[in-house]
Amino acid sequence: MKLPEEAERIADGIRSMRIRGAGLIARSAVEALEIVARQSKAKDVEAFVEELTEAARFLLQTRPTAVSLPNGIRYVMHRVNGGKGRAATVEGIRSVAIQATEDFIENAKTAVHRIGEIGARRIRDGDVLLTHCNSSAAIEVMKTAWMQGRKFEVLVTETRPRFQGHITAHELAKAGIPVTLILDDAVRYFMQHVDKVLVGADAITANGALVNKIGTSMVALAAHEARVRVFVAAETYKFSPETMIGELVKIEDRDPAEMISPEQRRQIGSIKVLNPSFDVTPPEFIDLIITERGIIPPVGAILILEEVFGVVTPEELREYQTYSLEEEA
Ligand code: RUB
Image (cartoon, rainbow, N blue to C red; front, side, top):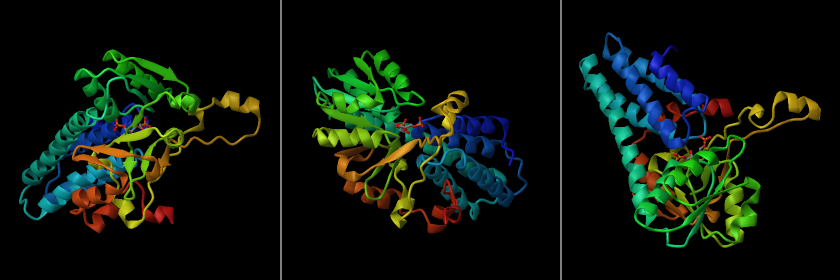
């Protein structure tokens, strides 16, 4: 399918990770849908919805793990499909679609802000925090606490192979927060000095498990061993409704060339290289999840899912998945 140039650029940006982080991925995909809606030349309501549905399916293929992406698309398409029967003209359904995209983006931004306010209360003077990867929600918590006058420091992992930790370190340092960059492999070494681990989420499952950047589960394991608390900052559109019916969140496998150049690989000899981008942290290793609706323990994830996604039909669940169930079988 051919998207308008601007929307195509967004899809390409998500695929190539120029646009990354679950929250931004969702907002950008929804923005691409808005562009399609605005520029559509469809002659009737049916054709308009068909065009938007095709664009939605196309955008779903860009990255598989961030559940925020299908959830953002579902948010819009649920309203578009609901409005289909009522809208008599293309202009009518176009405005339903545009309103839905604008609402999602606005709500998503407000959610991060709220998480910042709610989470900041959990940071104390003198805390040593540790974070992994680059999460705008986790950063918002730290920046809000800092702006409120709390004094603390943050250990930031490099987050190989893409070094998202450098972005986090830069953003925190720019805000004036003392930052120490550490090797991913040094997490257990430093854990005895840490008071709290704070990370973001690509997905939260129905049983309260966390899907986040590869290495998060090892950070949580080291924290568990050292009796250090683990906090997760996650907007509710990162909760996975599919997991309520027993589905697993698909873990993205990325190009081995992110880890090792083809040249180096040849020199080593005939080897396999695997580069999964995310891992799963069990709920037992998580103390609390900070959402825009408040703080919940991991066992509360199912309640959030029922509250937020109760309106999603099984058909929509199946239709707007990042991968198809058939493909998995
Ligand atoms: C990013 C990552 C982040 C979450 C949450 O992985 O794992 O922790 O997406 O981010 P990648 P945010 O760099 O592969 O996209 O809080 O910004 O949504």
